[in-house]
Length: 179
Image 1 (cartoon, rainbow, N blue to C red):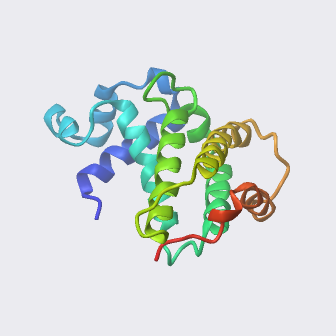
Image 2 (cartoon, one colour):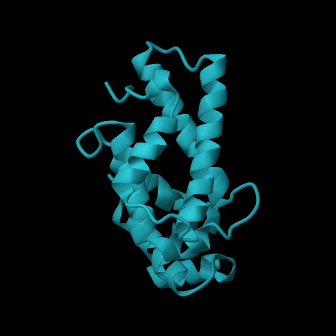
C-alpha cells in the first residue's frame, strides 16, 4: 500500500514534469507542489531521480499484477498503451542523464523483474547464459522503444506492438509469469 504522502510527492512530480523539462525541476519545487517538508521528502526519496523512477516502478508494479496482466504479452500491451497516453511525462523523463537516468532505471528494473519471475518459475534458478544475453538485449531494447514511442516513430496500436515485443522475448521465458 502506497502512503498518501508518498503518492502526493509522486503526483506533484507528475504535475511538474507535464509543465516543465526534467532538468528544471528541483527537489524544492516538488516539496512545495506536494506540500511536504524537506525532512518528509527525504524520508521517502533521495532526489528527484528517485521520485521519477519510483513513479515508473509504481506503473510497472501496477500492471505486472496477475489480475491485470496474464503474462508478458499483456504487460507489453499495457506499458505501450500507457506510454502513448503519457508521452509528455516520458519525453521529459527520458531527458534525464547519468547513472540515475530514467533509461537506466527502466533497464535495471525490467531486467531484475524478468529475473525474479524466472526464478519463481524455476525453483530459484535464474537465466541460462544464453537467456541472460537475450534478456539483456530485450531490456535494452525496451528503453529504445520508449524513446521511439515518445518520438512517435511507431504508427502501431498497442495490441500489435505487444505482439511484436512478445515475439522478441526469449522463447524459453515467454510463458513464465507469477506462480
